[in-house]
Amino acid sequence: MPSWWSRNRQLILQSAGTLLAILLLLLLLKKEDGTGVLVALRQIKLADLLWVALLFAISRVAVAWRWQVLLLSGGIKIRFKDSLALTFMGLFATNFLPTTIGGDVVRLVGVMQMGFDRAVALASLAADRLIGMMGMAMTVPLGLTYSWNVLQNISFTLSFFARFDKLAAFLKRTLSTFSIWFKKPASLLAALAFTWIHMLCLFGSIYIFVDDLGAHASFWMIAGLWSVTYFITLVPISINGYGVQEVIFTILLSNVVGFVPSVAATIALLVRAYFLLSSLPGALFLPSILSALAKQKTAISSPEPFL
Image (cartoon, rainbow, N blue to C red; front, top):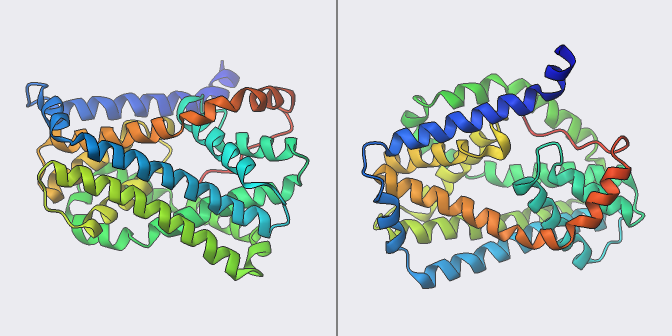
């Protein structure tokens, strides 16, 4: 029994966290008759839904190019179509497969299947994560300016700051494998530029939804609030952030932008839906990677998460 618990403790606790977050989201909507989300959805223009789909597609391609830049500068001469396919496979694994099969594991196995160096591939994945995190950190001060009073009442933030020591340890380990790219600042800047493209597409998508639903929040307010949500969601208290992301963003939109909970939840759920839908192309390429993963299960380990 103790060994079973030690093997499954994280998954069980994260599953419980996801359920609790979903229950909290339902409690936020309890005062309404349940039709608020449907009413809000009807206010979203069809053309805007298509525009957001395009923005998410551009965002996914930008994320793939960010990793491509890091791979090439690290000496891994991979074709973009291959890194794009691996990126979509990783996104699909992150969103739809058990947490024991992470997106980074899928990408790592894919690169190794192509015969490239495992150590550099691992380092590129850590660098990819860190650069994505750095990009989001640039807009966090805006989010804190708008939402500090609200955040003081969100207990999840306490967990975030309580785990800062693990974040610092991750950054220290990552920076130690980052030496390849310290010598190539142009590659780092290019990777960061692709992160900004991804962020602009994501924030722009949310801004479109907010505008359709009648709020007059600025683009930078939306950017800041999402960045704060992103960092709180990194706390590993739910499966892939399910529930927690929606609850935090709903609370922030309700208390900072002024939406009623049903409208705020509609935006949060739409963002989640687009994340899921935009990762579906990865399912086309995944079977071969899963087969390879099964053969190399004991040899492959995922890069450690941020928190």
